[in-house]
Amino acid sequence: MGMFSAESLNSFDDLYLMQLRDLHSAESQLIEALPKMAQATTHPELRQAFEDHLVQTQQHKARLEEVFHALGEDPGGHTCEAMKGLIKEGNEVIGADADPGVRDAALIAAAQRVEHYEMAGYGCAATFAERLGRTEDKALLGQTLDEEKEADSLLTRIAEQVVNPDAVRA
Image: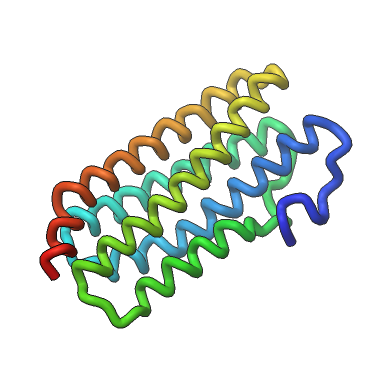
């Protein structure tokens, strides 16, 4: 179900909780997808970036679970359909008949779509936490937001300096 289809939104707290559940589902799905993306790459620097981000994503999920624990809530019961679609697009890239260098460029594009989705989600959740006076939540969510921005910047650097030049030559 979509983000707004099954849950009640009778309060700002409900909205905050819904956002957190969406992010938890997104991170859980990404934990399954990143190893496949890493395996599909040919550039060692890109593979390492995906592998490192897997470890970081596991930490992101653990931080969210810390927030859920503080709220006395369960993170389950929600599927992030947006992440499901983004991962499906990434899987299409992996399965495509493509030059390896061009595939790597396409994987970066797919990964950056994921990062931008996560940055939007964590930005909203951190802002909501602040509005609700949940300063510890805001700090945890803000830390993850910063890491997502760093991951996006790293992908941009790898694309511009390594992968895209090779893909153009393919």
